[in-house]
Amino acid sequence: MARLDGGWFLMGSEAPDTLPLDGESPVRRVGLDPFFASLYPVTNQQFAEFVAAANYRTDAERFGWSFVFKDQIQHPMSRVAILGAPWWFRVDGASWSRPFGPDSSLAGLDTHPVAHVSFADAQAFCDWSGTRLPTEAEWEYAARGGREQTTYPWGDELLPGGRHMCNIWQGKFPDNNLAEDGFAGTSPVDSFRPNGFGLFSVIGNVWEWCADYFHTDWHALASQRNPVGPPTGATRVLKGGSYLCHESYCYRYRNSARTGNSPDTSAGNIGFRVVRDL
Image 1: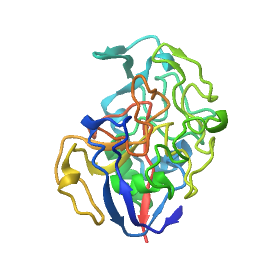
Image 2: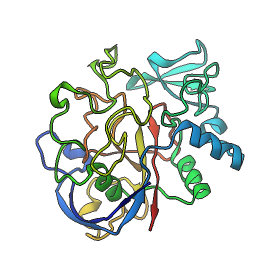
Image 3: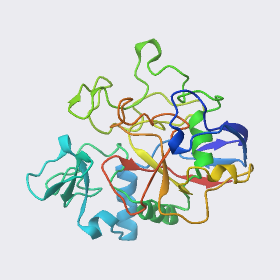
Image 4: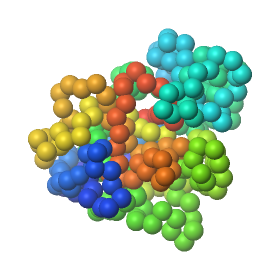
């Protein structure tokens, strides 16, 4: 883990490319206590160690299914397209250890981020490992890597010098995946350069659960010091975007971008990273 000094930073964005309905604005000055943040999102290997030690069953395993992107399904039966998002299929037997359906495995994916994990699954890992999920403010501070109000952890240009800096979608979503960054799905967590704090894979690859309930204007009422989300809610915050994000469809692979999802949701592009108090 990396020790982050905390202090004051500008959270959110009012840039033209933000999504106002997501509650990215206004920009506000936020202060945080120091904390430790994991260098990488939790990997399949780490999650497997937890599952074995705690004899844990994920929500997807208990429910009997999870969401798999259409191009990754390795099982011809028991799949149902999602209304309004036909590139997502409910696949029976899909889970963190069988990410593409019941006939798939984690072969060759040890250092990829774990996916198909719900908020409760991430919390259970934290309870076992003596860590916790970051607040949204902690996540954004960590992702920015010491830079102030840049679009991405490395700056404002998506491809500086033509170099890919994260794992997102290239091509026309959802039917033409050019995989110009080298990956059509998840990538090893150390595939791209770390940010200024030494953290890898904070943008793209998989969405990361945060501790806060999602709300679009709660930050107007929240404390400036160590802010947290509202006390209750129906969804939890996700940050960072994923390998399926593209500017034309889901331009949320930015530091300030945010979304929410129900805490029992699991999908092939949702994972998490952890933090720890000093």
